[in-house]
Length: 270
Image 1 (cartoon, rainbow, N blue to C red):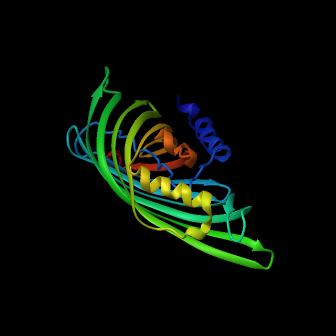
Image 2 (image 1 turned 45 degrees about the vertical axis):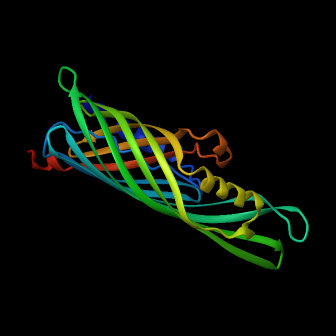
């Protein structure tokens, strides 16, 4: 197992180079934090990054167990993205044209839950966490009605997310893997939408408002390699189910990240 350290490390890096995040200008799921705790006093911090073309995501996460079987987690997530799309405009007559957009979104949240180890050596960890977070999104649209004219419009809104997250993780020597589900309730409010971004885009944003809160199911997996006290992990989180009426928003985007974690309790070990 010892001789597999460098090949496994290289596999994670090469996989990250071929798979990136698919950011969405309406909602992008952050990396799910899958607890790996065994007793009180244990805790870890980690940072993550995802780059795919013009999409860049970053995040910081922390988890701590003040007493046995109880955990507290916190995280901050940010993503910047850009792209092009086609939209319908009706002034002075209907026309379908290309527009470009750039945007950013951030989410800060915290959670509380319990964990319990099972197996001959407690190598499997079952956990159930619940939490709450707040975030904001801002989109900037650029249209080109005429070659010499450029118009810019902004749309922005804030949102909240409540979640319940059951998960399971496993450690075997240097290998660390996990999977989980996140049942999320996402509410949008305090929006400032410029109607001149076009009918199709305005209609999609209105779906967010009228359909709020969104009830989403997200699935995650993680595979990591432990080099005490560090853990290098490749992670994926995707929206796998949402309201049928909101499928036009293409919320089922896959967010893949590479994270580096530091187990604080392992720093004390010789």
